[in-house]
Amino acid sequence: MALVPILMPQLGESIAEATIVRFLKAPGDLVEADTHLIEVETNKAVMEVTAPCTGILSGPLAEEGASLPVGAVLGHIEVSDEEAARMGLGDPDEPTPHRQAEKAIREMEASAPTMVKATITGLPVPAHAGGVSYLSPRMKARMHELGLHAADLAGVAGSGAAGRVTIDDLERFLEDLERNESSPASSMRVAVADAMRRSWTRPLATVVLPVRLDTTLAHRRKNAPKKAGLALYALRALAMALAEHPAPAGRLVGDRIIHPRSIDIGFAVEAEEGVLVPVIRNADQYPLAEMIERYQRLVELARQRRLPAAETGGSIATVTNYGVFGLTLATPIPLPEQTVLLGIGSGRIAPHWDPAKKEFVPITEAFFTLSFDHRVLDGGAAGRLLKRVSELLHSPDKL
Image (tube, rainbow, N blue to C red):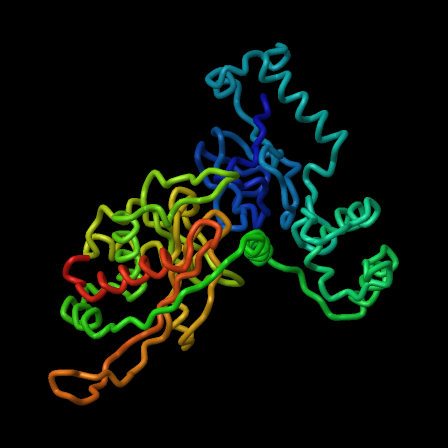
């Protein structure tokens, strides 16, 4: 008999670790190849780890609730001699490369038991410190040990020279925290916080434009029951506007503007304890009617936190409809890898002067905002992009 390790897979681009939610099989169970064995949670979704082969699930298994890096051993599958031969494992006593690797894995597990322990202890906050004028080596080491970021000390009054936060200030701050009730932050909450921290290192600005929605809403009613939401109308309009003039979608990296290969647009979906951003690839190449079913499917997957890795990340812009919360105006923050974010406020009835009737008439309008990286765009370019989105929404039959 041979043991085949079950390894934590690479679950998506930039995903370095995942948390074990639960085991779907127990030690001693017979499992088939590609059977779902373990449910794990990343900062983006809940996914399953599958069996690499057919055999008997063998312990010890990794601990539920542990955060483990990619490549960590989660358990083993005991395979028959026939399965071992099929997989090229050979004689159990023969020192094949696979046997040597398996032995190395076992030795690693014995010498480094933290492989199956949570990789973050203490306060669950990203540990990459930075963003303040000065941190002593001792402070950096202590903060790294606790998993703290400099932003967590923003409310600490420093007693050192020029108001500097000292190690004693930090320890008193931590002692005071222990007297308060606390709860662990979810992996999604930590991921959102980290993304917003990185976004805020750039000079961001926002332009605002009231957009008349009567034509769009009439088009939506006409196409019932297969109706697109306002966010999808805006997404399609933004995609078309960026396809016409893609410069605003470029990213500044060093002294170069990196231009997008395709018009991939994300849209914000509120999920439990955070926000997920599904992505519609090549959004400029598909008419609105062909995107409705795909959009609705992605919304449901996002709410369940089961988005496939291929349908998240890598977008050049995001659309967010904060109007669903009754908000008329907001200044949302673009993701770190994006230059622009289109926001939609709540629709409202407003008076509009009709020159033909020479009187005010009621219209439905909403404030649209475009938040942008001011290093890449100036207000004029951002305003023209937002104006073009408005023009396209006034002609929904062309979307």
